[in-house]
Length: 163
Image (cartoon, rainbow, N blue to C red; front, top):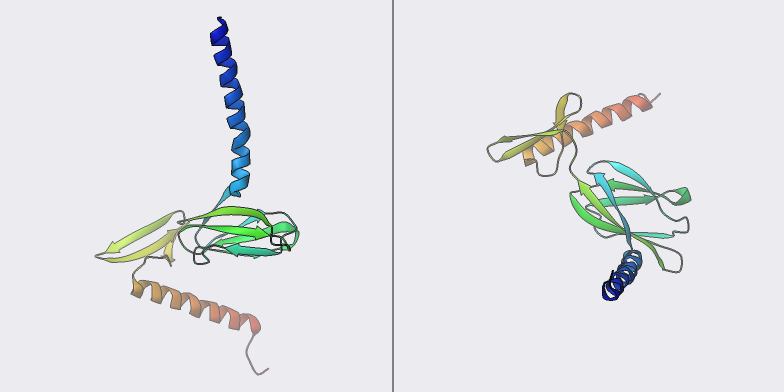
């Protein structure tokens, strides 16, 4: 091996070591340590450092977050898209900044009747499902039925009034 190719090889190693050494620093300085993927209408637990005093969500229409003891955070997918959550300590120092990617649910069948859209969850049997983008009439009737069922279940659990 010639001296000039040996020098080029060493220079390439130094440059690649330098670049590899900077990659983690740039990721840390950008603050996005990992992407949290969650389905719409579902929740996921993530662990953040314990000294968090404030959580800020970029777009609360896409995701909601709730702090739990021990650095646990519940992330709930509200709408499709991406947003971020910033965790700060009591001094206002940013401890973490994570990207939240909210995706569509699994195993959903979409039925189009002209321009009207209906969604059905097919795990294990197909049943009506409320999904962003469904036609207004379908969405409203499904949500009303779910609300009525919930009210009946809650009323049944507490027992009849006046006893």
